[in-house]
Image (cartoon, rainbow over all chains, first blue to last red; front, top):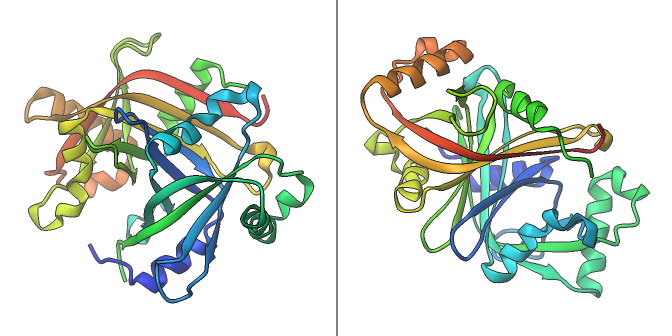
Length: 148
Length: 148
């Protein structure tokens, strides 16, 4: 059960097109949603300074989608998973980033996050992206592969 | 943001080849892993009686993979997500099953679970499947689709 070297794990996290965000309510109910995201590194060689940004459609009429935001507001612990599925299980791998989530307010950081999301996803060029932006400060990146 | 009708959500959950299991420690740290699983319905028309089984390689030397088991032992709340990624975001959908996890001991239920896993995954025919089996009793299935 080999671990992925950290630079390789970080690379796979960064280029992954979609991932899964797990949060938990203060009373321990886990919540998991698919998400698009962009990884922004303010220090290239270390996990410190790595932030995962995602846009969260937080319009009031769509309140069920806000559960991740309510969770991180009350309990910032958050985990982001990316992986590859393959029917050939010798090809399986995953990378998980654990950290702390927070809502990004209006301002320069939000502009940088939106720019990073638009740079990664052409789909966001057609969106106004007036949604909430969630930041996850990464504390730890772990990766696993069925084969090195 | 249309919801998937429950029968359709249930169908997509059942046929999905892989999913994501979220658990949380008693102090609220979320944990998410990819998993293969089989859905077993003891009552076809209702969520009551729906169980999601997965095999967990619980060999002592691989203890990091046991975190989901430690979590459900201390806090049974568990959530299973399946989805489809598509660069055309009008094709996106997901289904989530929330419930309660427990470890399945040796006995008839474990045999049924292993049979269901082997029926779904030819890959398990080559495995001894001497691993732990996790059951998640489903309380609720929700689904979302970008378009109906």
